[in-house]
Length: 143
Image 1: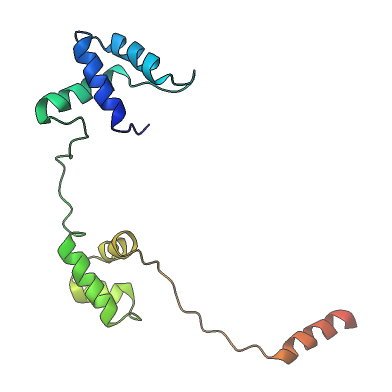
Image 2: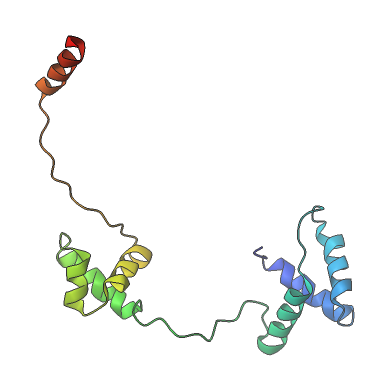
């Protein structure tokens, strides 16, 4: 469940007021917010994480993960792909990827997630004439 800003603030205050007891904090949470019988309350791990984050950074918000930064979908590549698409919009994404020296998957990810563009293929079809409908209905009734 995504907790709004009011909940972590209350939990941290109650945790400190209750002398570091997560169970007493959960009881106070139930009394204060009166969730439904089957609704969740912050578990012990969540309470400890919020308090730990607050003590380290002064905020109960989630810390950014120390994982590997995204390089292929960075702002520079997004700008380059956007310019390339605006320059020649009918060109396939594969050709853009080859010209920009990016992987096909990275270009498609940038197009979909960052630029909010969806892939499509132009299908060439033959023009339908008005007489086609009449011929088809006549054939159906001829049987």
